[in-house]
Length: 50
Image (cartoon, rainbow, N blue to C red; front, side, top):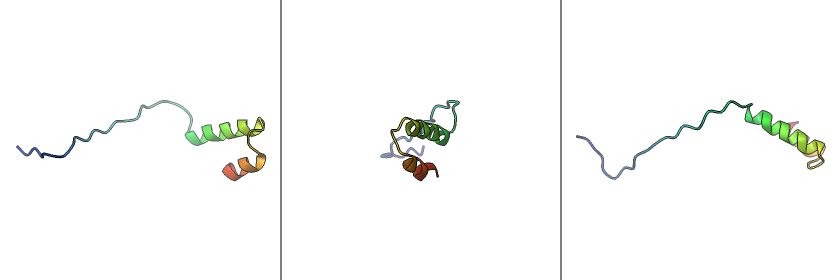
């Protein structure tokens, strides 16, 4: 038996797989909406995605 004492068990949790668009696409859509609603300026939008 080669049980090592003092080392905690390491469990890796897999993130749930959900079918949705790429996060960068979601961010760009959100930023475009914020720009259209006047929450952020055209300049701020261009700095992020320009």
